[in-house]
Image (spheres, rainbow, N blue to C red):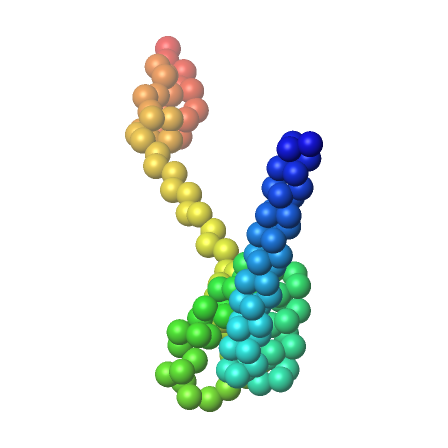
Length: 125
Protein backbone atom coordinates (compact mmCIF):
# COMPACT_ATOMS: atom_id res chain seq x y z
CA UNK A 1 0.00 0.00 0.00
CA UNK A 2 2.88 2.41 0.60
CA UNK A 3 3.81 2.08 -3.08
CA UNK A 4 0.37 3.36 -4.05
CA UNK A 5 0.68 6.32 -1.70
CA UNK A 6 4.16 7.15 -3.05
CA UNK A 7 2.93 6.92 -6.64
CA UNK A 8 -0.05 9.11 -5.85
CA UNK A 9 2.17 11.67 -4.11
CA UNK A 10 4.62 11.65 -7.04
CA UNK A 11 1.73 12.02 -9.48
CA UNK A 12 0.29 14.98 -7.55
CA UNK A 13 3.73 16.60 -7.34
CA UNK A 14 4.21 16.31 -11.12
CA UNK A 15 0.74 17.71 -11.76
CA UNK A 16 1.48 20.72 -9.54
CA UNK A 17 4.82 21.30 -11.30
CA UNK A 18 3.18 21.11 -14.71
CA UNK A 19 0.43 23.50 -13.61
CA UNK A 20 2.92 26.02 -12.26
CA UNK A 21 4.97 25.76 -15.46
CA UNK A 22 1.86 26.49 -17.54
CA UNK A 23 1.01 29.41 -15.27
CA UNK A 24 4.48 30.91 -15.68
CA UNK A 25 4.27 30.45 -19.44
CA UNK A 26 0.84 32.13 -19.56
CA UNK A 27 2.16 35.06 -17.51
CA UNK A 28 5.15 35.40 -19.85
CA UNK A 29 2.86 35.35 -22.89
CA UNK A 30 0.65 38.01 -21.31
CA UNK A 31 3.68 40.24 -20.64
CA UNK A 32 4.89 39.77 -24.20
CA UNK A 33 1.45 40.63 -25.63
CA UNK A 34 1.27 43.72 -23.41
CA UNK A 35 4.66 44.87 -24.69
CA UNK A 36 3.54 44.32 -28.28
CA UNK A 37 0.27 46.21 -27.76
CA UNK A 38 1.98 49.15 -26.13
CA UNK A 39 4.63 49.62 -28.83
CA UNK A 40 2.75 48.66 -32.02
CA UNK A 41 -0.14 50.15 -33.95
CA UNK A 42 -3.20 47.87 -34.21
CA UNK A 43 -2.42 46.62 -37.74
CA UNK A 44 1.17 45.89 -36.80
CA UNK A 45 -0.01 44.12 -33.64
CA UNK A 46 -2.33 41.89 -35.70
CA UNK A 47 0.50 40.98 -38.02
CA UNK A 48 2.76 40.14 -35.10
CA UNK A 49 0.07 37.89 -33.63
CA UNK A 50 -0.02 36.03 -36.96
CA UNK A 51 3.76 35.68 -36.76
CA UNK A 52 3.35 34.30 -33.24
CA UNK A 53 1.16 31.50 -34.55
CA UNK A 54 3.45 30.59 -37.42
CA UNK A 55 6.89 31.21 -35.92
CA UNK A 56 7.06 31.56 -32.10
CA UNK A 57 10.86 32.02 -32.10
CA UNK A 58 10.67 34.96 -34.48
CA UNK A 59 7.85 36.42 -32.37
CA UNK A 60 10.03 36.22 -29.26
CA UNK A 61 12.92 37.93 -31.07
CA UNK A 62 10.68 40.78 -32.20
CA UNK A 63 9.30 41.23 -28.67
CA UNK A 64 12.86 41.39 -27.30
CA UNK A 65 13.73 44.04 -29.88
CA UNK A 66 10.60 46.00 -29.02
CA UNK A 67 11.33 45.82 -25.31
CA UNK A 68 14.89 47.07 -25.71
CA UNK A 69 14.56 49.68 -28.47
CA UNK A 70 10.98 50.94 -28.54
CA UNK A 71 11.37 53.13 -25.46
CA UNK A 72 14.04 55.16 -27.25
CA UNK A 73 11.75 55.67 -30.27
CA UNK A 74 8.96 57.15 -28.19
CA UNK A 75 6.05 56.26 -30.52
CA UNK A 76 4.19 53.20 -31.75
CA UNK A 77 5.71 51.36 -34.69
CA UNK A 78 3.74 51.03 -37.91
CA UNK A 79 3.13 47.83 -39.83
CA UNK A 80 5.71 48.89 -42.42
CA UNK A 81 8.36 49.32 -39.72
CA UNK A 82 7.44 45.95 -38.24
CA UNK A 83 7.83 44.37 -41.68
CA UNK A 84 11.29 45.91 -41.92
CA UNK A 85 12.25 44.32 -38.61
CA UNK A 86 10.81 40.97 -39.68
CA UNK A 87 12.65 40.96 -43.01
CA UNK A 88 15.93 41.82 -41.31
CA UNK A 89 15.48 38.96 -38.86
CA UNK A 90 14.48 36.43 -41.52
CA UNK A 91 16.97 37.46 -44.20
CA UNK A 92 19.06 34.52 -45.23
CA UNK A 93 22.65 35.16 -45.93
CA UNK A 94 23.82 33.19 -48.91
CA UNK A 95 27.25 31.67 -48.47
CA UNK A 96 29.86 32.93 -50.86
CA UNK A 97 31.78 30.35 -52.79
CA UNK A 98 35.21 31.25 -54.03
CA UNK A 99 36.96 29.15 -56.66
CA UNK A 100 40.70 29.50 -56.78
CA UNK A 101 42.22 28.20 -59.93
CA UNK A 102 45.86 27.30 -60.10
CA UNK A 103 48.02 27.48 -63.21
CA UNK A 104 47.19 23.87 -64.11
CA UNK A 105 44.78 23.03 -66.89
CA UNK A 106 43.32 26.53 -67.17
CA UNK A 107 46.66 28.29 -67.13
CA UNK A 108 49.53 27.98 -69.54
CA UNK A 109 49.91 24.52 -70.92
CA UNK A 110 52.58 23.06 -73.14
CA UNK A 111 51.81 22.66 -76.78
CA UNK A 112 52.48 19.36 -78.36
CA UNK A 113 55.15 18.90 -81.01
CA UNK A 114 54.09 20.42 -84.26
CA UNK A 115 51.36 22.67 -82.85
CA UNK A 116 51.37 26.36 -83.60
CA UNK A 117 50.09 29.04 -81.32
CA UNK A 118 46.67 28.69 -82.96
CA UNK A 119 46.50 25.10 -81.82
CA UNK A 120 46.64 23.62 -85.34
CA UNK A 121 49.19 21.10 -86.30
CA UNK A 122 52.03 22.19 -88.64
CA UNK A 123 53.35 19.84 -91.26
CA UNK A 124 57.12 19.66 -91.48
CA UNK A 125 58.75 18.22 -94.56
